[in-house]
Image (tube, rainbow, N blue to C red; front, side, top):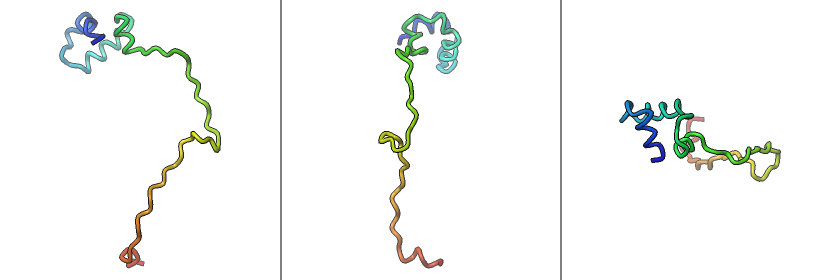
Length: 79
């Protein structure tokens, strides 16, 4: 919705091809209206710093081991 006027103004010849319209808007980012530009260039308030993972970090992503499937007598026939 924020980019509708810009689409007609800058990329009207490409309607109804949404993929080409999106590319057109990205190529014309400096000419976009502020609401439309906000869609393509999100504002980052502060630089986000990512802390390095330390061993034993409680928030560190752990390896997920799937549950073991039950073994049946038939599983050992080929041994």
